[in-house]
Length: 193
Image (cartoon, rainbow, N blue to C red; front, side, top):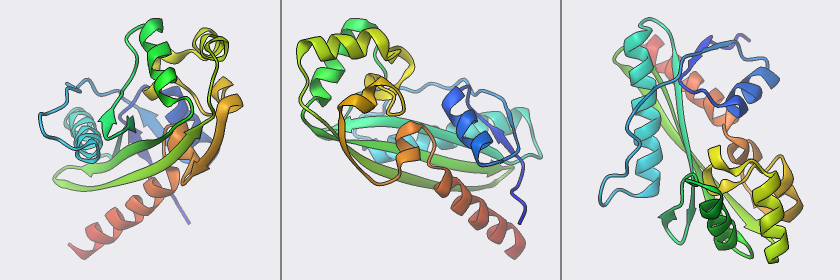
């Protein structure tokens, strides 16, 4: 079995680490797109759209390759909470998550020229109730500013996570099983043309 070489349309160190850990050959080329939400757009549509836009932006720069675009967001009560703008915002987000379930959604797109496949992974995560001191600890030590929902499941936040339903790697930053399934679908579609 041979995995197709990818161009990862992301600067995320976590996505790179996940692909590297499974032995997937790839290059990186970050996409710079507008990540603003569109009025009336569901969180699912939002992450699918951004994943596809990222992949298409890099595909235009690097034609001929297979580009992987992904976008992850955290959703609580049907609201996207995104990445914090500062440490106070990170604390606000963690207080929202404490004691509650939330969803981690990742849109994944593979693009090459005019061909594309898009999928989505949803994982449910339950945080334990947290004291103010625990929130402050996580904000101070968890490097929250570049992370959807202001936490990294594989770091300090693990101290406070009671349960995960679904794909753990999705919460880390890339549902690699979905990427594998989409790559197979992409290959089958290409062979059928």
